[in-house]
Length: 369
Image (tube, helix red, strand yellow):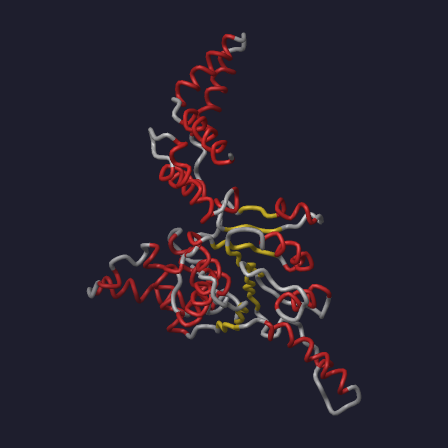
């Protein structure tokens, strides 16, 4: 019965989709004029009709338009395509979760509003794995774990720890973008909302996609409720994580909690309490199955990263294979300025390399000129 109803609906929608949008817009404008409104109103009505016809613009919307054309080819009877449409819904999901690969989560304080609190990111960071340079071993671990996850094999929660600007967050975003076509979705959760994570996980557990819960720059000033709640979710609580969710976190702190000297065991009084406090602080990081370490690149690594970004942006196009004095001079000046940039600003890191290439591709001159 449901299949028959769905087929009838698709047949009607197919007939609507085959209508001439320009003719409809003109008809709408004529109707506005016939109603006694002025010509300017008619033009506005026609413009709105055209605007609806060309609404696709973002990556997710363009992808949806291509998918729709593949499932429902022009001049086809949509009711005859119900099997292909059903397979798409089964493999990709419906609604916004089927359309967008990246979401942010801002809970509204009500378990029944969890779905509404998931907000699609229409202009997500476009970083791809091919944009990243060096740190191949670290990325390989993240890719391998993610592939295990989406192939329904045993996978770990990951902690990406290391120096600032070394590409921890970019790695997570690039990997999730790479496999978004395999029903993988990235959901960014701020530390402030960790206490509401059980409600989110319960909601996601009933969906047909795979979800990476992404907690960026995770750290705690002290052991608090969100700390203990996250620790229980990772391992040790009575309620387990849904099989279609995994947690990836990044941090500049190896043990995630700011450590005071008083927390360290000593030979003075209070040794037991100090030892217990330190063990509690270490316990959260230990619950991530795998820790991936990103360290500051040395000078030559930093320059290779900058050159890789510049090549991809077209700034050094041809210079890498140009043995002439002109090509050599261009490479020399690039490296010299890249080193000067990191001394002037944020030190050696992939982030600094990106900022340097952003500057030089934007025009001539440097801040120190």
